[in-house]
Length: 124
Image (cartoon, rainbow, N blue to C red; front, side, top):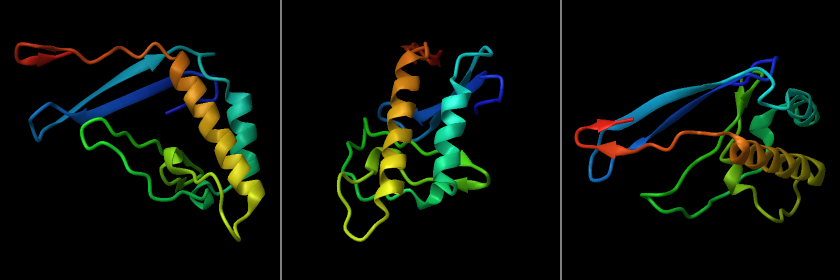
């Protein structure tokens, strides 16, 4: 969740090794952490994020991740699965989707998200 002041809450979930339970936690970031002007510009250009072209993308079951974005009541497909080329699609929308994905990657790499560590029976 990203707020207008650039603060954010990251919700991290997954499955523990050799188990079927979901591990979830959240981490808060202060105002100004996210460049909301750049993000809003990208989202305004795209409009309906559910229209961003995505396709099949083979991923590791144990290490694979999915990145989606929700905006204005719509949710995108997996931004990691934006095809390099499409035939018959809207090239401007494809480019805007790629730009959004690059923004997300850059933002994620700059966030100091705490690694999840296992210690006896606890995660933290």
